[in-house]
Image (tube, rainbow, N blue to C red; front, side, top):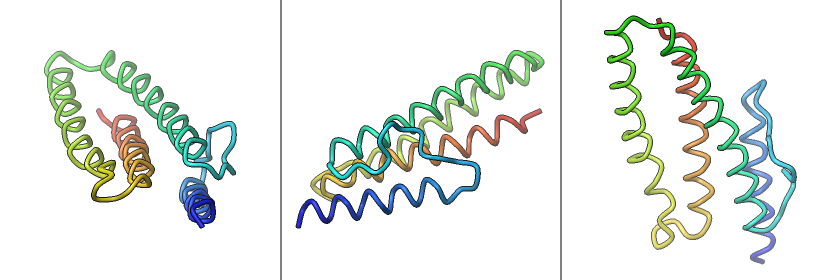
Length: 123
């Protein structure tokens, strides 16, 4: 039964990651069915977007005036705090079970992808 639940969650996660057009699962084994494999897959996906976020942020901030740099740094710090307040509680096993870790990582990935879009259009 537990393997069935993990497989089902893995399928849902894979579908949700693929549902965003050009986005794709960026891990070595997207069809995994164990907790550790799914967790690793989601973490690899998050790490890809986190690295991209840092690259876009570094590139964007290098083109801004001094006041806009200050504003963007402040905005970025506020965004990180909000992301952490929103996503981190989802990993609480006593409230959401072990699968809450999946939700927390997916939340981090989705909010990071949204922030990348924001930074790419920031002027």
